[in-house]
Image (cartoon, rainbow, N blue to C red; front, side, top):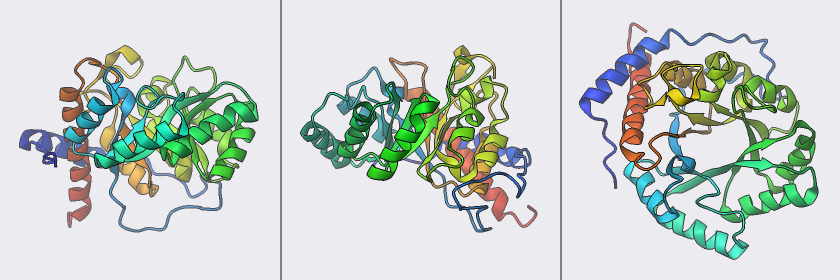
Length: 299
């Protein structure tokens, strides 16, 4: 089992960041438009956030090597990109790949981002059949708005969640979470958002408030950090940038988030593991800081 301990220096740095971030998360109003009949979560000790990996981070490596790299990060949770699980595989090949992944001790928490290019039963259905054969409980998705009703029908049929992924200012469909939320907020509970925090802040959106406003429609998270909130090319190790990671984590706890927080590390493609390990150390330290702040008699 990989060593999951946080180096002392990284822990202290991240803990301080976590405690400092506690006061920065904006509160949300009870009038926030949460749909799906779930309403505001009751006050209760938050469940721990589960940190995972978006396998796109390891896109330059074959599946067997990517599996070993995820294990080295000390998490069992993986969201699979098609580079590691091609769409062209037969159901039998997908089942075999699933056995390989799960046999290594990993838990498949989703797949994608999958782009639904055509508004037809054949095209939409093939991706749901793929996800089912691969054991994916969730699809991080991109699609035209007019395709969403068809996708919703398949989501109910297969009982697979669909989380619309926002891609920032260049995205003509869903630049920010709000652009996706307006379409899914009255749909089946399986339809929601995959909030990419890096792309979100590049639109000028307050990502912490967006999480609060989306509430239970937040089904998935992609985490990264940027030194410059307006520039995709400024991506860096999580904790070294300008994105308020601790405040984001606190808001996820506040809304009772039960999905996964998946690191999508898009830099250092040929040698991502050192930066990913540092990112995980920071995120674990931030969570420890929030937990310490909750337990403090003075908080």
